[in-house]
Image (cartoon, rainbow, N blue to C red; front, side, top):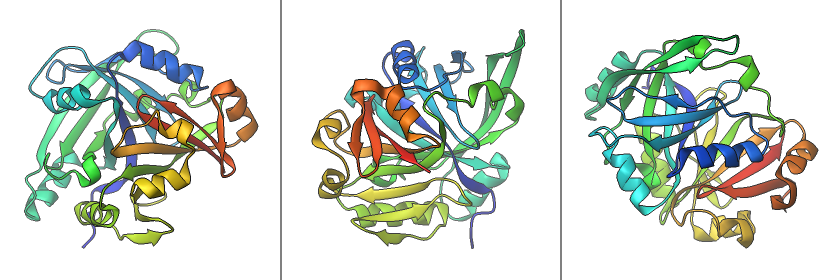
Length: 280
């Protein structure tokens, strides 16, 4: 029976060592980046967000070492990159209970928030409830969790959803795995979605009309992207993020000389990740 409280991909977490430098880099790629946020002390992290229609990219950095952020610190000891994927949940407590009923030791729900600078002046608060799949359930090295937005109005500001590169949504998250079929089947079991062969990889939908997950091996990665951009990506785990743009010309102009063309799209490397702009 499908999971009742998982509604598809919500956002991806790109974990970085220098948070402000990463925000400047993604701004230079034509993204509108939010003001910096600071999470509740229990998390010890700060972030910038890049908002689209229903999903977004989160740039995350460690501000203070806490027990909660140890897995992220361990990840950063190896590399920067797309560490986690979050699913939208309409009820974090019920979602965690549903996982537990299936024998998965879900972590949470955990409540936290962060102050938000409001576009018209003043400060609001973004509040969330989250739960995590067990840390050892990480298909292809990708950690997953679910996020319930309690204050969508303080996260999805129209002013933050317009980008010089005309990106509108996340199309696909791509994961490099030694055994891509096994990794895809692992994720499919965890989120109760089907897995399909897709060319040289294995595709798992996240739910609804949200982004897909694609798993492939090193040969599949090499066939998809030029070596120049692959050299800037991680050697395993989540290696590429495919984004839809309404105007490939604007995306190409925003990237400037860093843009590398491939299969009707353009791409660039950023923080251990291939970022691909696909016309839609």
